[in-house]
Length: 223
Image (cartoon, rainbow, N blue to C red; front, top):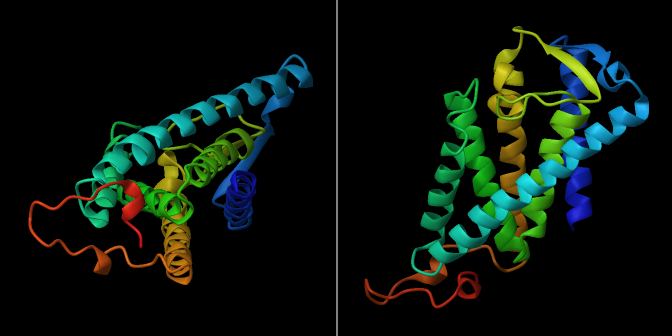
């Protein structure tokens, strides 16, 4: 599952890269690793950043969709737990360069999707894989800013002001309408899979008999 999610996010980032390039919204300035004293040194440098993104993505998912979300699910309704963790996840990025209302909106819904991905699989591997694949592909391979932060990459690209509403400009694709559409498709697909698996109702089967009733454990939230 993790390997599939990594490939899926690489494919999504590749589609955005080709689309933006074709529309003239980005320009390739150079192949960045050729600026290194040797290609081997460039490859090792980029591999180091890929590993750092793995640690960062796994850490955030363990905190937000692991400890935080699963504990909230024990006392609050699923919709509330999802919303609270997604808002917190979005606010985590609010001090990043280029942060915008659209960026906040997109990251909020990415957080919602990560929570649904956990509920679908009952595992953190899918959100970790997508989180890692997305960040590493956008930054280390295609040279986009990730939440406003730039990293060494295979391609060094220049973002154009033209189409910034779609590309996210200085904040990167997470601040653009293209990612809004991509996230919407992921959310709809995941909700459909939850329903197909018989786990789609996050609300109807969880009526409280009294206001003090609590969920016994995260495993009871989807019947």
